[in-house]
Image (cartoon, rainbow, N blue to C red):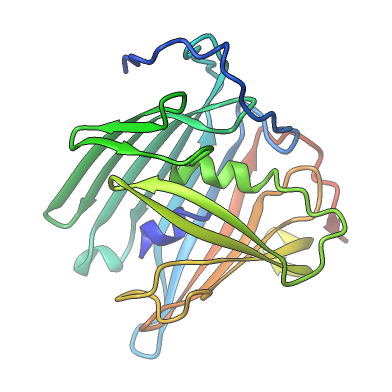
Length: 264
């Protein structure tokens, strides 16, 4: 449950020089090094009522690691269960991504997951010039401009929505667990959202998720990001097979632009 929400809302690198390779160039005016977002995760069901289920953070560190002569962002996503939920179900996850500052493609990704007694660790080196991803399990082919799940969050914030009509979908490919997944992001228009931080003019987004034990619907998640120069998530709501989840921004720091679109 926690991981599915963190996906929206997360070293020695042996990579050949790629500075001569031609890559896309994407403007990153919506975020900068030093940005940190903190979220509260709440769960609701008829049986439990409202419960604080966990906390999550998404952070861009201030360091700039050069990989193959190219500047990178270092992003860290961290989440854990808290409170009464931990009596029955304990989750702690940490994702890290070093992704290209200009092309917004990942070079190195790590994951540490603990679910009760289950533990999973992973690391992936992306060699985009050769279209492969290298992990402890082997070598996999990857498409052009594939993301990891953390860099995908920051890339999605850069999508140009100028003149886009509600209902428009944007395709997104990401690499996780040695597989490439195709997802979509559906733009649903503008709405005003109220949280404990205030009222905000927002862009409403619906990301596609995989159906199964957790989700019955391909588009169960509603995500609202600020309609300003930051595009930060304010609120996430999702229906689950049992109950629902609400993720709310509780604090922020190091924003790239003023928080100008707060509704008084």
